[in-house]
Image (cartoon, rainbow, N blue to C red; front, side, top):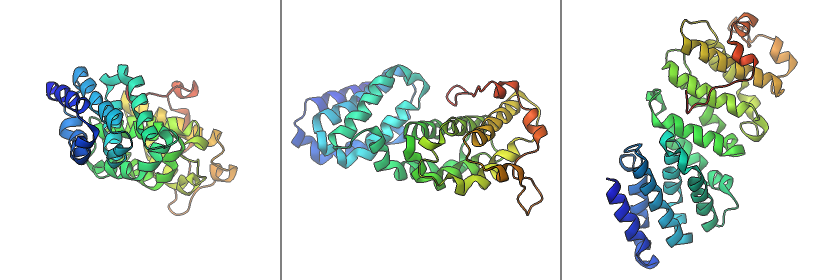
Amino acid sequence: MASYLTILAAVIQGSPRQVLQPHLVSLGNALCNPEVSQRTEEVFYLEQLLCCVESLIELCQEDCKEISLQLTKVLVTIMAIPTAGHLHVKLEDAMSALAEVQHIRDVTGLYKQHISQLMEWLSSTHDGWSCCSPEILQLDVIATQSGPVIAEVLKDFISILKTCLQTSRDPRMRLKLFSILSQLLQNPGETVNSKGQFGNYLEIVIKDILSPNLQWQAGRTAAAIRTTAVACLWALIYSELLSPEEVKCPVPPPQTPLLPHKHHIRSASVKTQQGNTLSPRNA
C-alpha cells in the first residue's frame, strides 16, 4: 500500500495545479479515510502519506482551503502514531504550511478554524473507546497542541472525559485520558480556561470525574489512575481555579463532599507529590 502512496505523491508533484483542482475534494477525502490514514503504523507508509499531504499543499497553495479539514485530520492522525516521532518537525512544518497558504496566522489559528469539526470527528465514537483506540491519541494531539483553542469546545471535551472516565471503563484508557487532563491543568489559563469558562464545569470534573476514580482499587494501573487524578486535583487547587470555599464545602445533594476525602489524597503514589505525571502516549 505504501507504494501506491509513493506513486500518488509523484503524480501530484508532476501535475499542473489546474488539472488537480477539480479532484482536490476526492483526494482529501481519500487520504483522511481511516482505511488509508490509519491503515498501519509502518514508518515508510507514514512518510509516504505525509509526502502526499506536503505535495498537495506545495502545489495547490490556497486551493487547499477546500480540503483544509481533511488534511488537518491526516496530519493529526500521523502525529498521534507513536512510530511517527521522527517526523515531528516535518509534521509541524506541514501544519504551518497549511495555515500559511490559507493566510492563517499560525497553527493555533488552523486549529481554531477546525476545532468544532475535529471534536465532532472524535466524539462520534467515544462511547466505544478502549485503550487501543487511535482516537485517544488523536484527542491528545488536538487537546495539547491547540493551546487556548481547546477552551472553545469545553462542553464536548468534558463530555468525552465524563463518559470515558467512568470507573467501569477500560483502566488503561482512563489512565491515558487523566494524563491528558493533568497536562492541560498545569497551565489552564493557556488551555482549558483561556476563555474563563472552565469554572462552569468544575462540579462535573470533581464530582463526576475525579472523585470516583480516587476510590481505592487494587493493582498498579489503578494506583497510577489515582496518582494522575490527584495530580489533576492538586493542579486545580494550585491554579486557584477552586476558591477556598469550594475546596472545603460539600455539594448537597447527594451527601458526598465536592472534593474527595483527604485520606484518598494521602494514599496516592508518592510520585504525585514529586509532580510527576505519565505521558498518555507512553502509558
